[in-house]
Length: 398
Figure 1 (cartoon, one colour):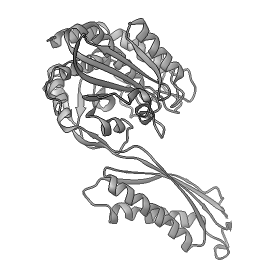
Figure 2 (cartoon, rainbow, N blue to C red):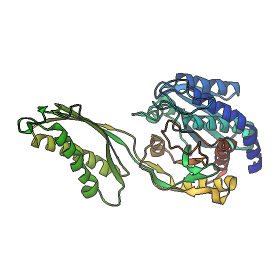
Figure 3 (cartoon, rainbow, N blue to C red):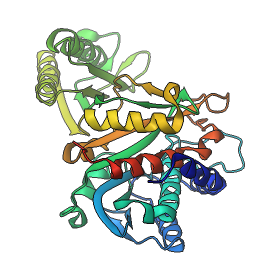
Figure 4 (tube, rainbow, N blue to C red):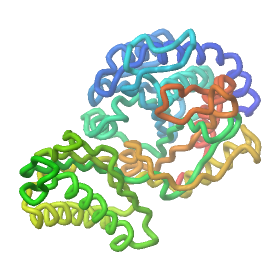
């Protein structure tokens, strides 16, 4: 049984390496489904460390394996590797060199931390039993996502994991803390695309035209009754529209209006019913006013349900490494994650690693000024290594 202090020492010794990896990834971000150089960089490090791996899993995915000489459980660790279409505004030496592309959701740290975890585990693999699979997943940020593509790859056809673990940055928590929640944690997500077409014209003659702007506004307001009057109060539900394009003028009502929005919830039966209601309300409102509605709904990720028992175990294991007061209970979030596909197939938990606490690390996820507290380099990978080792030791994973 390896002592926690040994893992902490290894984490501190490799902190600069993790920092350098993360800064390289941050400076060289790649968008979803285009992570070719990122995957190659990961592969080069794994090869350098003599850790066996396989590339091109479900696209640009990479899977590495650290296998103890002793048989035991199979634990999988997952990190997403893609970046966002954001123009970085940070003034830092490792600022993105790819204009309009940025690691603004921490996937650079997720990847660097998982590599650091493997670096530690590879040094102590004689001390534990079982196998550790590291999943470097592409395309989390863009539907249909990379998780499902990887899981559908023949490589995963015969893989059985006792647990799948992921960590995710969280600027709302200060560095030195982590957050975890068992059960329902992140919502499902679906995208709604609507194009309304009618007879536009002069704004001074509304009786002769279809007021597509007013009709679109009515549709958005009417759809809110889905949340307020159709959803059970016990089921968290969000329906929001972030795009409303009516390219007319002060005195011109356009023929076409475009709406784009998102629907999020935690219940699959209600999700299906609500999407049908959304379509019905849009179509009936458009028909009432004599215009056409083209509706496209893109089904996204399911809700992320963390394993209650696994989350409880990870919480207790983390307290040994971090301290009791540093492990926080999280609330449900209406954001979404395709890690949910792993959680549908295996016992799985995503926990959050606090990255806030300084002015530079206070910006939210998906901000052009997002960055992390550098103290995270000293323990994020060590904690994941410790969690992995203790789960491999645990007799009862259910």
